[in-house]
Amino acid sequence: MPAVTADTLTLPRITAVDPAGPFRPALGVVDAPTTFEGEGFQVRRAFPGIDHRLTDPFILMDHLGAVEYAPGEAKGAPDHPHRGFETVTYVLDGAIEHKDSTGGGGLITDGKTQWMTAGAGIVHSELPTEELVVKGGLFHGVQLWVNLPRASKWEPPRYQDIEPGEVVLLTTPDGGALIRLIAGTLDGHGGAGMTHTPISYAHISLSPGARVDLPWPEEFNALAYALAGDGVAGPERAPFREGQLVVYGRGGAITLQASDSQPSVAPAFEVLMLGGRAIREPMAAYGPFVMNTRDEIIQAVEDYQAGRMGHIPASQA
Image 1 (tube, rainbow, N blue to C red):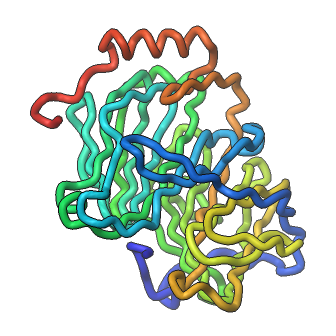
Image 2 (image 1 turned 60 degrees about the vertical axis):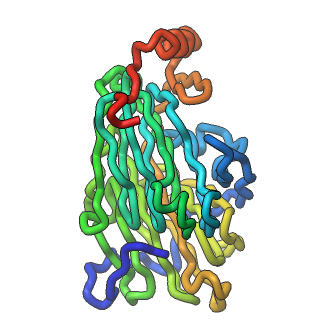
């Protein structure tokens, strides 16, 4: 890890931020508890019990791995439905094979992101490749759920495949960090992913001791999740490490810094940085459905049970 790398000396640089700030405060650091999904694979859930007003428009984020599977150990998520939101699957190492009721899908592997808008409803599966099951190997990925505004919840399902070569690569003024802008905007740069709600979603690799100061839209919230390594966040220099989420307060800039010494398994401090404009609509959620009202949730369950969200074609299953 990571799958997409570059020489930072050759990359566009983000705008320098006054190191004196003011920067957004780190309101808190939260541990991501471990749970199990699908056929029994382990994930770390990054928004445990956090007030949704602090994470809106993001609903959930699962950190999968990094894990070295032995032969026969890899597991996935067989056929299941979604309605009312988007799943954003970012694979750093390894591969997931995706199939769905529209006949779409494909392989998500090594630095690729699949942005699936479930919209009015879809049934899909997310499974390890046959090679990973038979031979074992390294897997590391993240799945983010992004809510849809009421006006977009009934749109037909659609996909965006963001290939590794389409990710916008940036660096800091001193070249100490590699920033991969996956979707949304950052300091005037636009990522490949097109979103229903304005957001920023980036993967940042900080060299030991490196600092990142990011201009950040005042109207966005701001969250940082550590994929590997450790460092500090905010002007308070709140310590955080792999498997922890930082919730930032309000302000026009964000700061985070890698520790001078990183764990041997993580030569860089790997951080997902995300934020967006809150939708601020009523939210009713039940398992794989995220709607605005309880009645819409009941309808989603009934539609799925009646087969109205479709089935994965036999030729794919």
